[in-house]
Image (cartoon, rainbow, N blue to C red; front, side):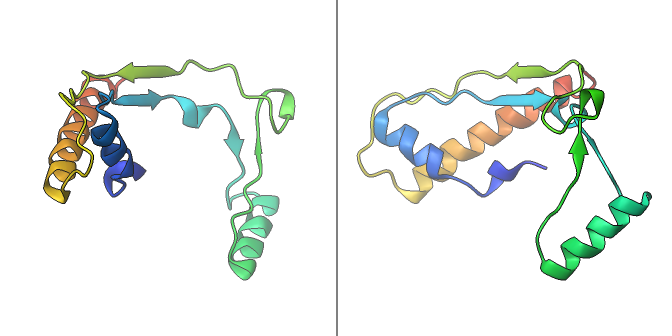
Length: 118
């Protein structure tokens, strides 16, 4: 799940400041903690409670059963090709923002597809 597909504010800021954008994708971070699911009685209870109060109440633990200590697992940060911004644009148009955002998303997809086996 990539949450950045609908978020374009970072592109507008990059255009306004003339800063290049560098796509980075993290792999392996979802394996750092174990989360109880509905198959356990405690996980099932938390799921029912979450639905009742309409908030997320996940119970996650890592190494030694500790809540804030992650498991020792490999993670990778994949860095893509920079999206060059030639000059600052004080008031970028929606079309300019959409074009740079599309380039960013294409590069993010490329590096994910190339390295997703890691």
